Length: 246
Figure 1 (cartoon, rainbow, N blue to C red):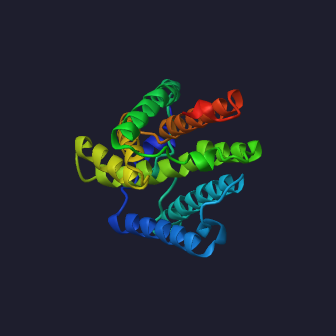
Figure 2: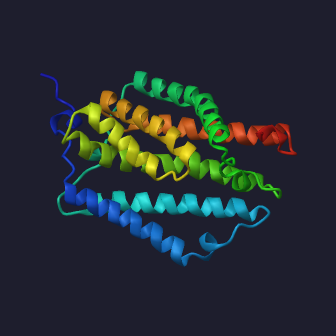
């Protein structure tokens, strides 16, 4: 008889409510501490490439906050593992689907965001930080590295591996998916961004529910973020006066 893979022998350990609260508390404390005591993050709006540096700072804080939350879960004496947080093998079919969905969702998200901004008469989000007048390609590459690759890993571990898993252990997927997506949306602040984040949160939670692995969710999130940033900075490369950002 062939051996059963270790990931199939041991089912994921359910996330306890107190452990989820500890993880959330750690994330909030790290973020609050950084915003309060890192001078760069308390700077008033400024001109020039320094605006991109401020955005990089916020992305680094997000990475630190969610990373600390995950570390708090893994280091607890109750003994969670990466498998319990969703790091399990996923078939190539799920990976290809995830990348395709992330890329396909990009123009839809742009169209939805544009429609909401025009309907609600909102300013474009973050344009002064992504593309300041004194633009830096080095800073842009760093933003892609953080926002497109690193941050989605820990956001997925937190919002799908922790929040969605905790909800899913207590209710049906039809309820856990939108509730976890709502939590994901609320951390994105702007109204039109929250609407897009809610839709993406539902898609990501559905993908996790079906694939039983966080890896396709990370790939979808990364491909979506990278595609958006590539479109923005591609418009800058083609129209240096930034008219292509409309």
